[in-house]
View 1 (tube, rainbow, N blue to C red):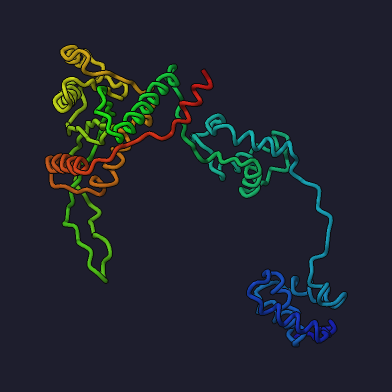
View 2: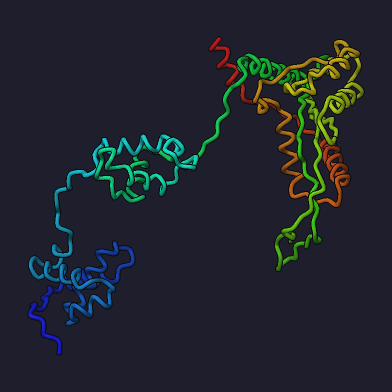
Length: 384
């Protein structure tokens, strides 16, 4: 037979009863306060310490702590944590700086195979080397401890953020040349709205979109069914037929697209695009091309063709790794978002036909692509 408890009963005032009853049923109060209120309410109702511990899924020690404290100083104060002086930090600033320094190095520098730290791997390395490095407080550091040290410095050594190094020593001057052309085109287009004739120098933006994949279905697509299937159903399996490259020239004055769909992007294909441009534009006009420094654009074969059309073409080269300066990239983005999106075909030839059809649809409702960010041009002017 269990021994009767010698601990006195808990006597509560009406105010304390009301407070505990409200708090023990609260859905918004902190869990610890709700649990303590339930402990005291149950003990006041006559439940034993063991019964309370089982009902609330906690320990007898925890139950006794709050009962004894309440018996000593009352319910309202007894439920609160006792104020205490914060302990002096065990992990010193020097130890934290050592962890931060490790995070700023690569694991391979310490003989590991990995290129980047994971939080677990960094924590293991810290634990394994803390004593030898003179920071014994970190010998048992958990992953969460290491993470808090890194968070304080906003460090995320397990992540990679990509950047593009400017490898072209003439990047700024080439960028300035391109932006000045865009500024001139903007003025020409504004004048055209007021009835000015077509400019003698016509500017087109030229580039290639390689690797457009011809992908086919292994099973027919299932159409949406109202009220049942809101989307197109498609089998996960697919067939690869090959790829095409799109060579495109975007007229910056009226949005017209001159394009070819080719297997490769060599001098012969680029010359064919130049011939298309030569045939399309008036013979008295100069065709100014904004394009990158691809080998096909400056090869001996291409220059031999250009020599047969003196003064017809004029190059404006974008900087190395500066393709984002070429407005035709916005055209390729439009293709990707529209007729190339989720496209499925039965052959490479079908894909080529549909690309050409999509370009024809763009030319039916052409859109003039404009460059609006001229802040870089102002910055280069100030730098100069």
